[in-house]
Image 1: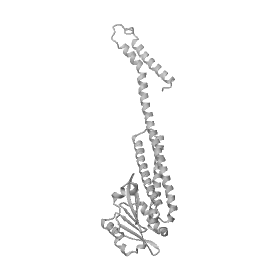
Image 2: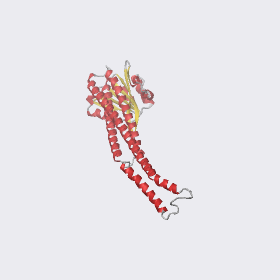
Image 3: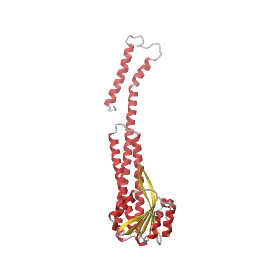
Image 4: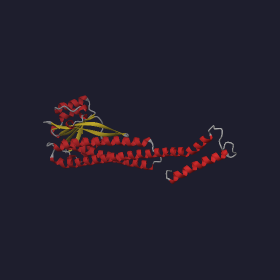
Length: 316
């Protein structure tokens, strides 16, 4: 599908037919958004602008030189946009090409950042006179959405921390949730750093209009703040993980302590029973009328004495 945004009648309008490109004044073109483009639509745009659009494989390359670069007539930027699908997150690579101030974007998924930016078009169309402004607006919207993701993860970490502090029993679900949040935090951080690399390239460029500099400066600070927040969230998760493992060790130590005390308490009675279980011919209490009760009393007394000693030593 192709969405062609251009200036007409003192506002921004759009067409969805790629064949309409040749009927629109080139100076009025603002943004061509290729969402799930067919090979024919992609070829038509390439032929119209006399360019080669980035393939998905090229958009996914992580080298700095592949994320943002300029040629004599083009500016190309590639960035990953994070998408939440249920409880999981995936990254969708998006390619941007700027030629003569016209933005051309290629993507293969519906993205909230694009939908939100398009809504902004119709609210304040004068704020987007060129494709440069549209590109910056897209990244600005994406950074706001990333901030929401960071905030949501922070809330989940806080809830998880409370669960650990009040949990009567620790189960593997808690440690799995911690591990999952760690993966999510790392993915968000990677996504934010990807935006930082593209914005850094834009800041170094001399082609972007001067009136975009204030927004770029604010975006740079926002990205730095998000990176700090993700680092802090990861540290909190490591702390929760250490706390969980520490509580598990305490629980295991309690169990081992119970078995240790039980074994020590029953050692004296076992010794007494072993002595009276010997097959010697002459044992003083063997023929005694109260020998059996005497041995039971010794066993009880030895166990009780052991427990008293343990309590005085505060081992129980």
